[in-house]
Length: 223
Length: 259
Image (cartoon, rainbow over all chains, first blue to last red; front, side, top):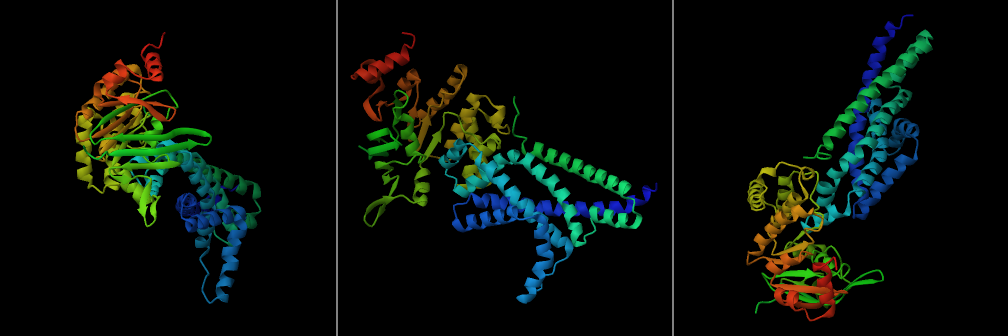
């Protein structure tokens, strides 16, 4: 069994998977905060935009979104005279980020709403505006609450990157498929891939754990 | 005589079927220290919450510092106040809550500087200086970098008093500031409130069950019952020779709970 021969190409795939995960998680986090807070906004336009975004991306399949952005959007662009062909990496990051952002938005909204009413009253008594109260008082307190579900979403996102192999991106799943076609050594290759995803997920979960401790450092401290 | 700084005229507040303030008339003079006592559910906390704009009123008019609080002067008389008006009016008041309500994710120092910086627009240096003076006033200079969860209840409440004062309010509202404290911590908070009561300019409204304390610091004591003021007067009068039967019963129950 020449499993060592597979290491190099698979590691190259891992690197693409990591890049996709990092970029799309960053994009998703930004979208999650934007849309989550937007859904709590009193501005009807911002609220409607946020709700629409969340429902559309939660309500459709990631695979279809990916194909739509990669295959349908360029054709649509041609019709209206715009070049909407993007690099597969861009499409992958966009689809994954938009998807995880929609789920994350609900996490943000829920956590902010769980901040006790008395905190809002204290903020009002100090004359903070509604927006200041949301961003300065409520959101930072809600952060530790968000971290466990965010951790889940990040790991979910890592695993979802495997879908981008279907738009010919050279991620771990894509490399595995290539090697398997070449060697027919399915058992070895997929076992290795399994462990590689698992290893990356462990590292990601550990990182999220560290982040959770950091944002919650004001909690549970006693004299 | 000065214009009153607070004037409630026929104020009604209902929570569903329940009438908490029942055509309340109530005035406070500038610099006056008023203690509000009364049984639970008599509307005493609600008065403070109405003044702090935490509860809307259903009827009546409240004037603070010469201007209607919940209304604005419109073309056709008084109209419901805009958020801009409410924000202007809130600036005149500060509130101390029963459960402190400090911001748990901020250090003590940031609890004190956040609103002065971002609401009043003070520079970081000015806000910090103001906060340090106030921490000294409440005797907690050494706790500037601590988080609220690292402080005792009494310390937290002193920080909360400093936080409200940092906004330089004309009126301070204290809503049962010692009711949530362990008995041995009550004294340190009352000492801070008493030192404030010596300031002539500051108007203070205090809802409390600490009768001895009320007697010592107030210019006037108001006994609330069923959403109105049943009896009010100088503390010696209210505590020594209350006229109303309900007041006597209440004071007896509070001062001699075992009988």
